[in-house]
Length: 406
Image 1 (cartoon, rainbow, N blue to C red):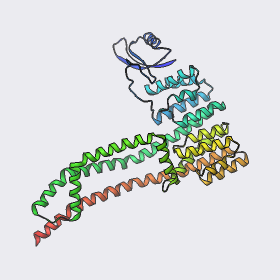
Image 2 (image 1 turned 45 degrees about the vertical axis):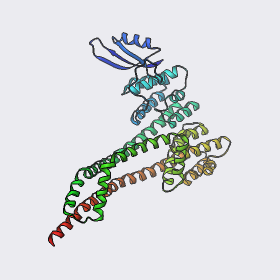
Image 3 (image 1 turned 90 degrees about the vertical axis):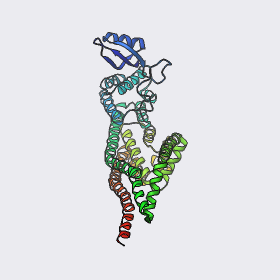
Image 4 (image 1 turned 60 degrees about the horizontal axis):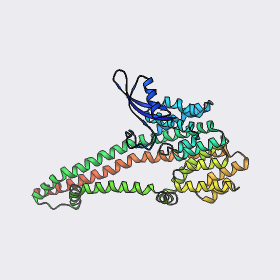
């Protein structure tokens, strides 16, 4: 069965739209008529539309972190209660807050009814479900512990969404302050500074260097500001396209993970994700190699991810986890030591989980410190610019007063 996006009219003539699950478009229309709805358009919500298809309101299947966290928790609860996966997807789809999420969950259910595994169904929607998400589900299915893995995955997604929301809210005020301040400065450059310059030129004053610099900046913004803005936009677009190449992204990530001042933070952040996921999966009785591959997928840095995948390959060949991690040189010494002690004691899962918790705590403290420093840094920077503007305007005025006094 598949999901179909429909537009219809009820008996009172009011427009209705939503998602219905059926085996075909004809079946979807029949279901709508049984609900006393007159179909206007019924289109499959999968990717490739026909030549006459009406475009869907969303071109890509991206979903918000909050929606993903909510859906994951619902599925974890339902699957953990021994409800079949396809039924869990149907129930979660019925409770979805948006048409987009409902359509996506029903598409997943249709793929499973067609004979695919849940991981294979998720792989059809890479824009909605990240690599680590699909890898964790695949590991849970292969181990037969999907319910437990889904519970741990729900905790991970919710914690990640909560941390992102915390950082975004903390950075909201500095971002607004920076935008408003820059807007005011640009407006002054365009409308205020030229009038002041005319006053100075009328009196034939000898302008200080700071004032001449302000005049130059004002003229540049007035005549070439749109060029600068266009270059910034084009540069952003070009950088985005450049980073879409896996080779270019790997080059950037390698630089960040191996060069100061970012290397320590990047590796610490990747190690925290890797250790937390690995510990949870091992405690859920997921095979070690599968757990290592799924944990590697949680690292957003491609260079560290490659090193983590190399650890999984080395363990598959019979090596120890700690030895393989030490060979890569991409993980903190503290994590390697804890993994070694966990392997020696036969309690790798709890040991790695504790290490992941400690690394998460350190990263949270570091993130809080950085975010706390952003606001005063923005205030100081903008205050410095305003101070320079004021000095550039006041210095010639003081000089004019001195000339008049003489």
